[in-house]
Length: 181
Image (tube, rainbow, N blue to C red; front, side, top):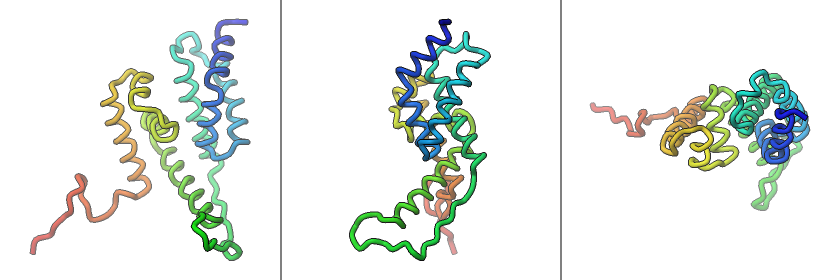
């Protein structure tokens, strides 16, 4: 067994569950995550620059994120659910309507993350979906925790702009605009 194959098997043993969880979060479907895991390891086993890969997990994570967002772009379709038969429960539980709204919000956020470019997308996924600490991300990317915080802030700001959350009467720095008469 060659060295690359050994590294891939070690990666699967150490990080397979984490990569699968990441793919499931990004696609919102376990069946798709299973297919993408297979595609991920095929891509990794045929990667042209295998000898130059220093951190197989970081490389695999980046490929997994790209695979998931490519899948989301290919399968972008709106599923409509008629609300006539859905009733909101009287108790404090979320119920079918709440589940539907949460699923729709998740789709919108994931679509916005998909519009981020390269490092911003990866940072956003690492920090907010995988919930890695700033220190862990900094170690993985060779940056300081302070740099990672700033990059994550920018990525979050960009997602909010894509979602239209930054619109309103406030200026860029959060100060209310006051018009003088």
